[in-house]
Amino acid sequence: MMQTSLQGLAGLQVSRLIVGEFRDSKNLQDFERGLLTGLCQVQMEEFVLICFREFEDDTDTLFNCIGNVSTVRLVDLGLEEISQVPARSKVKQLECKKCGFEDVPALKLSLFKELRVLRITKNKRLKNFSQNFEDLTNLEVIDLSENRLTFSGCCSPQFQNCPNLKHLNLSFNSNIRLTGDFTNVKNLLYLDLQHTTLFGPGSYPVFLSLQKLIYLDISHTKTEVKSQCTFCGLNSLQVLKMAGNSFEGNKLAGNFKNLSH
Image (tube, rainbow, N blue to C red; front, side, top):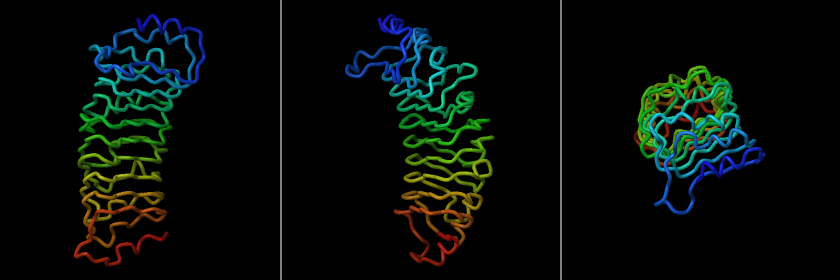
């Protein structure tokens, strides 16, 4: 029924198309191969797919007819893996909210070469970040907030040749270890780590290479500031949020002397 209805949209030009079930969660459909083939003849700026229960094994047709859409939002889906990405995809903004990922699907997502904004949020099963993003030279914003990520080696290895990344949001996750290696993301302007248990900050200058950063939020990260050089290198910082943390001996011992703004 839905596939037939979508085929009837051929030839239309719309700004936004929303496909899915909004009301009766008990009657959610499974996503089947070819469901969206009718959209190949529809011109649209934004596509939203919402509330599908399960995806067939080897379902690689999700992006076949929406690869030329500028904005794609996948919301509340039983999607465990990113489907095959068509060559020369024109997707610039992609959101995956409340999906079924267990690992950040960085390799498949790296095939969206025009991608500028990526949001993967509120995925209760998303715990691992073992893959790396590669060669996303247009990418400016990554939001990985409100998942359950636990990983170490943050944050350079995860972003290979992503030189224009400006906004990185890793807030409201589980545990992240910062090594101080931000070489591949040295152009960051905004870094949000609030409400994620952090290892590294406070003991040594992990932010040393983020000299362009203007906004840093490490609120409620269980950080104990011990080193006077905790914030060394943050020469451009304008906003620092760190509520809910502590200082060694409950004393400020010149911990902020390296901040010029």
